[in-house]
Length: 246
Image (cartoon, rainbow, N blue to C red; front, side, top):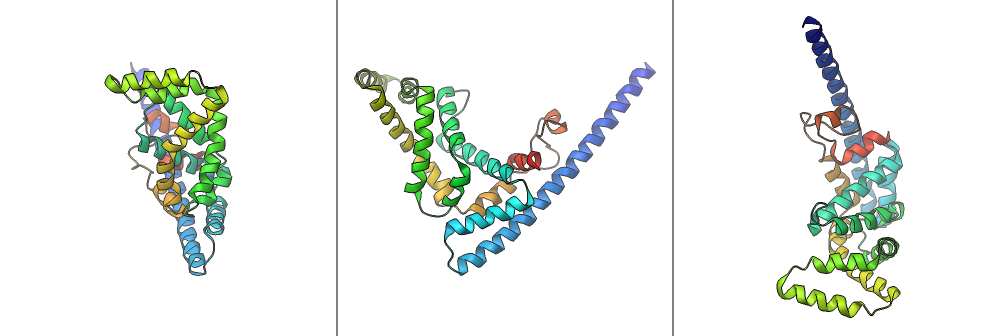
């Protein structure tokens, strides 16, 4: 009995030490991120005043944040933020809309975010959507236009809309595969244009990074790098990628 108590005491101490260490690393990551972000905001304000193009400003902001962290980790962090933001905007839940969830997640994963960064706050949504279209074509080809279209139309609901869906499906059944792919890609563009405009075209990169910084939860709900954070069931918010990527 005493041996069991001693083992439990030792385990509690080990967990307590792991938590302390994890909290310390979270604080260091958060301070480091906020310091780099302040520098980036000063840099942005200076270049805006000087009339620099937004794409050049974004590149400099990324260099500053990437200098504090692994650059790939920074891009991955922004990518996660965008993916979650779009799915929330569209109200697509993985458990209820599995095909659509995988569809949009795969499209947003396939985007080259190294290229994508220049579009933040740059009012070049048409150019940005070309990048999205390339990723959409790749994903539609991989998942199959028929399956995607069924999910998109099925999302319209039952009743009268159900009959409309059935009629559309029958009509499209005679369409060549290449043309069907084009139809599905156009529908996807319609879905994605508004959330991406809100999250990227109309938003500065520093604002996005500020929102990412705010995602770090209180120290009582720790997370997510496969260690004690996972054991406790919390996470570092979007900063988890930076935490892992150092």
